[in-house]
Length: 273
Image (cartoon, rainbow, N blue to C red):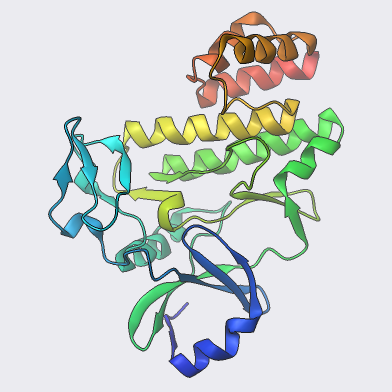
């Protein structure tokens, strides 16, 4: 898809078509199966890796604009990934789409008065929050969980690391469920996704934890994200024990170390319960 160029006049015409707004920007439905995602003015659109970075005492990068920090310590190879909402990230995603079959990455960059301002994304019409899955029978929830995991794995196998899949209990997730009972990953741009040219173990670890949180939410309706006290830990363990989940897997969930292989094994165990 070719880049989209808007004038200020064009932008004013679509402002009443806003359907959603998130931490990165606002979403506008402009035509069939197409959305415009226009980033907030308060967020930098340049590639932050091209600027000199400040480091705090723990070696964590600090942005020169605002107080926001990255979530990761500086590691070898960190320069090999495309950062946040940079224009080149969208072009990089367009190239990566040739390798991705199960998810739709950003379709094209978007410009307003020739300034990079966002991207074009697919509109998953007739879709609902992924958390509606919690109301479905376990057999269907399990099928959705398997499909969702397969899509995330395809992305990370190609060094694309989605974030914000699961979060604070039953808040917005970057996953939807279509009317065909198909899970779809969204927000594969901005701060919600990292793109790399090779595997970044630190990013893979965060994606695995994020999908672990989401799968536990949709399979068992329990939050892993906010376990801070011994009482909350015991409540989490008790809930899974009631579901006859073996202690081995409960301990693994709490250690936040579940791998793709662990999930495949767990799905087989869950199917037998």
